[in-house]
Length: 288
Image (tube, rainbow, N blue to C red; front, side, top):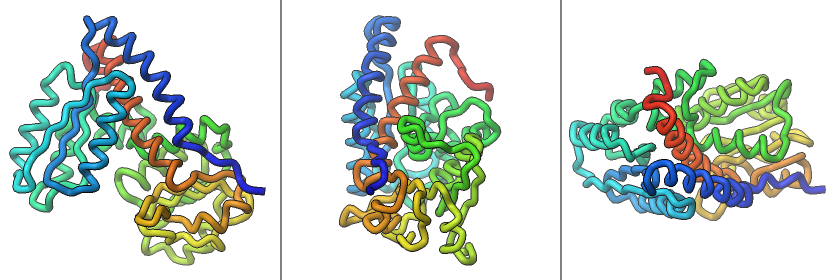
C-alpha cells in the first residue's frame, strides 16, 4: 500500500486562502495599503527569474503587493547593499527576498546579512539562523520551514523519532536539522564526507533529501515505513531521492513536483504576512 501523500500543492492553496483573509485585515487597519514583499534579482539567470515571477504571482493571489528590483549582472557588492538599505528603510516593505545565486563578484553573505532581521522573511541572515537555532523568535528559512508546516498539517509524528538530513547548505540542510531538533527529533546531518552513508540513512524514521543531486539517495537505502521528504527538484521532474521505488514501502512522502516546492513559496508569503502583522503591533518584533 502506497504511503500517505504529503500534498504541498493542496496545502499551499489552503494556506493562501487563510492568508488572503489576514491580508484583508491588515489593509483595513492601514488605510487600504497592502504589505509589500520586495524581491531583488541580480543578473539574468532564467531559473531565478522564473522563481521571482512565481513569488510575485503568489503575492498577488493573497492581495499583497510585490516590488521587483532588477539589477544588472555587473552589480557590485556596494551597489547591492545600497539597494537593500533602501528597502530596509521603506516602512511599507515588510519582507525582502534576495534571489540566490548572485553573480560571483558579489559578497553574497554580506548582502544577505544586510537584510533587516524583521524583514528577513526568507530566513537567510546569519543572525536569524542563530536566533532560530536558539529557539528565539526569527523567520526560518522558507524551504525547511515549509517542510515543518507540511509535516504538522498531516500529523506526522516527529518527537522521539530518528531523522536524517542529507545535505548541509545554510538555507536548507542546516536549518532543517535545527527545526527537527527543536521538534524533539534525534537528528543526524549527512554530507559528501559522511562514511557509510547508506547505513546512516537506513536508520532514519524521517529522511530529508536536501543534497541537490538528482536521485542521489537510493531507494534501497530507505527503511520500510519511513517518512520521506524530498526537497530537490531537477530536470525530468525528479528530486534528490529515488522516490518511485519507495512509494509503496514508506509511510508518507512528498511528491516531486507538488510537495516541498509549493510550500516554500507559501511559507515565504506567510512569513511576510506575519512580519506585517508584527510591524503593526510593534515596530521591531525581534530584538537586534
